[in-house]
Image 1 (cartoon, rainbow, N blue to C red):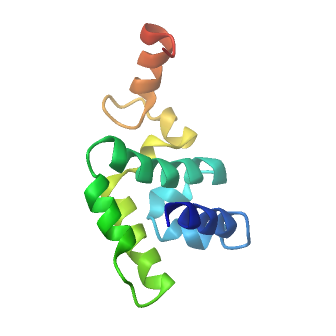
Image 2 (image 1 turned 180 degrees about the horizontal axis):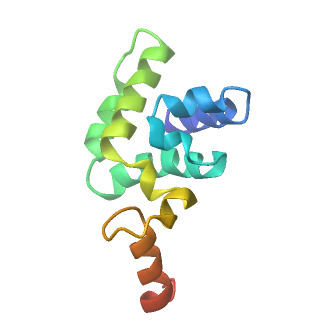
Image 3 (image 1 turned 180 degrees about the vertical axis):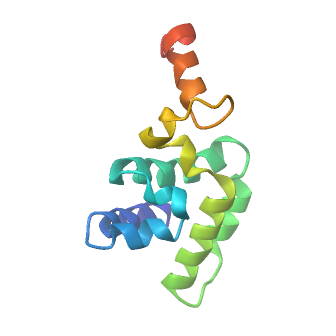
Length: 116
C-alpha cells in the first residue's frame, strides 16, 4: 500500500497537478521543489516506522476505506500531522533564525559530523 501511495503521489507531482497536490499539505509544501516534496512525503512514511509509529501507520494503511480518495485524505492528514515540510526544502535553509528550518542541522552535519 505504501508503495502504491508513493507511485500515486509521484505521478501527481510529475503531472500537471503538482501545485494542487502540494497545496493539500499546506502552504509551506508549495515552496518545495518536486524532488524535495517527494522526499518529504516518503520520509514521513519511513520516519513513522523508524521512530516507533509502525502500528499507527499500519492501522492507517490497512483500514478499509470506502474509496482510494478517502485513504489519500487520511494519508495527507497523517503526513501533515507528523512531519514539517520546512525540514525538507532548500528555500527554508536561508532562514538564519536560530531553531528555525534545517539550516542549523545541515551546518552541524557538514562541519561537526562530516556527513557521518
